[in-house]
Amino acid sequence: MFAELIIAILLVALAAFWADSLAARERANDAARELCTRRAISLLDETVALASRRLVRGAGGSLTLRRTYTFDYCEDGYSRASGFVVMEGREVITSGLGRQAAWWH
Image (cartoon, rainbow, N blue to C red):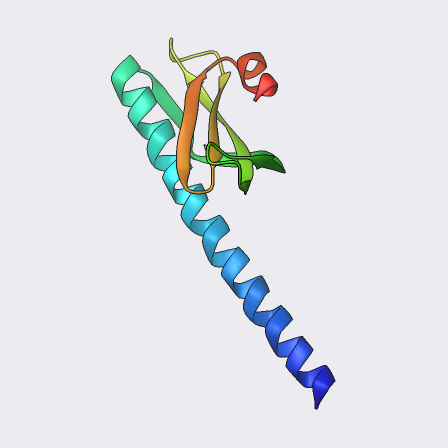
């Protein structure tokens, strides 16, 4: 009985984490699209990819999950470059063009 309860709790926690990850990824996709639209560049593949995930202290001092997503874009119709979106929880902290700028987050 106790083992089944633990398994059920773990499954619920896993489902909640999965749903949160999907929501965060969708928000990162929105941020990448907005950035590309503002800069009049093309968002390639129409999606972001998770580059890193780690626990950090948020603004209030509590632990939060920081996710860094990368995406590819094109300015001239020929070359491919990388951009990034950094999120804490479901909030976009920063986004930009150029992969190296994202790694200090």
